[in-house]
Amino acid sequence: MTSLEAIKYVRGELQVLDQLKLPHEFVYDNVSTCEEAFDCIKSMRVRGAPAIAIVAALALAVELEHKKDGTTQKLDTIKYINSKLDYLMLSRPTAVDLSNAIKLLKKKSADTAANSLTPDQTLACADIRLSYIEGAEKILEDDLTTNLAIGRYGAEYLRRQQVAIHTPVANADSLRYFTTSPPGTQGAPDQTYRKLSVLTHCNTGSLATSGHGTALGIIRSLHKMNYLDTAFCTETRPYNQGSRLTAFELVFENIPSTLITDSMAGALFARRKEEKNISAVIVGADRVARNGDTANKIGTYSLAVLAKHHGIKFVVAAPTTSIDLYTESGASIKIEDRTGTELTQISGAVVGKLDGKVDVNHTERVAIADQQINVWNPSFDVTPRELIDAIITEKGEVVRSSKGTFNFKGLMPQRWREQVEGSDESQATMNSAGSQGLQTPMSEESTQFYMESI
Ligand SMILES: CSC[C@@H](O)[C@@H](O)C(=O)COP(=O)(O)O
Image (cartoon, rainbow, N blue to C red; front, side, top):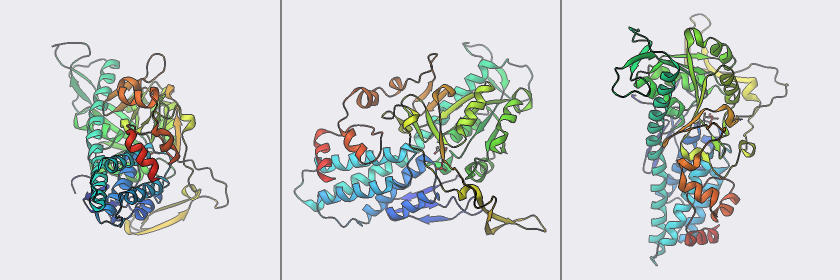
C-alpha cells in the first residue's frame, strides 16, 4: 500500500477501513446501507469530522445507485433521501461537517426535484438519485483538494513564523536547518534557519479525511518541503486516536516523530528553548464558531493554555466547511458525551510474556480502573479564540487580529452575507432537521419543494 485510505469508493460500492483494528490489522468493511454507515460511525470504526461526513453521504449514494429506495414518485424519493439523512445526522453530534454535508445534499436533491420538469416520474426519480450521488461524490473529491491546500498554506504560514522569530545561522547542519529567503527581502541571498518541531493532537490525517489530512496534512507538507524537524503526537486519551492512528500514519510516512502522553505536553514545551524547539501546536477542528472558538478532541483546550503560557503558536487547521457561521460562539456547541468504559477499560493486541512480541491476531480487552468509579467523558472541548493564533483553511489563513477577533467575512464574503447579514429563510427549516451551517440557501422554489416533502 502506498498511501493510507480510510475510505475506498467506486460508484455503487463503499469500503471503510475498520480503525478499531488499527494499527495491527487492515480490514475494510463493506458499507452498503445507511444503517451500516450509522453503525460504522457510532462505533468509531470511522472517525474524524470529514471522514464521518463522507461515509454518511456515500452510504446513501450506494443505496440510491442500487435503487434500494424503491420509489417511483419524486416526492417519495426526496422523502426517502431526507429521512435517511436525518437518521444519519444522529450518529455523532459535534462535528459540523456531517450536518453541512447533509444540508448540502438535501438542498441539491430538492433543487433537482424542483427543476425537473419531466412529467415522467420514473425519469424524475432517476434524476434526483443521480444528482444526489454526484453531490456525495463531489464531497469526497473536494475534501482531498481542500486538504492539500490547507497543507500548503499551513506549511508556508509556519515557515514565515519560524523565519520571523529565529536568527539565521551560517554553515548549519542541513538535517536540523532549512534554507529560505529572509523575511521582507527581495532578491537577497537565502539564509539558513532552524527547522520546526510541532505537536499535534488526536488524528487529523488520511484516516480522518479522504486523504492527506488537515492538521496532519500541514505536518506532511512541512515534511515534504523540508521544514520539519520532528512531529510530536499526543496519545490523546481516552480513545488514543494519537497513539493508535496518528503515530501509525507518521511511521507509515517515514516522518520523524515522537509519541508523548497528553500529560507530557507542558514538560515538552518547557524544554522548547533547548533541544525540543517546539514552534507550534497544530490541531484539527470539529466545529469552528463564527467568533473563532473551536471545538476539537478533548485535551485541545489544555494544549492551547499550555502553548499560550510558553509563547508557542497555536494553529487550527480547518476546511471552511468546518466554520459554522450560524453558531455565534463556542458556548452553543453541543459536546458529545461518551461511555465511561472508554476510561476504565482498554483493548489492544496481546504482547507475548516471554518474547515481548505483539500478536496481531490476538486482541484482549482489559480493565484499567475500578469499574465502579463514576466517569466523566466528554469527547470534545472548546478552545476559546483568544488562545488561537491562526485558523488555516483551504482559502488561506485567518490570523487573530490585534483586537482578538477572526475575520471570516473577508474569507467567505458570500457565505457571510447569506448566513450572517442576510435573511436565510431556509435556516429555520434546516435547524428543525437538527443542525446548523448550510453553505448556500435554497432557491425559493426548492425551499417550497423541500417544505412540502418533509
Ligand atoms: C480532521 S479531523 C478533526 C477532528 O475531527 C479530530 O481532531 C477529532 O477530534 C476526531 O475525533 P473522533 O472522536 O476520533 O472522531
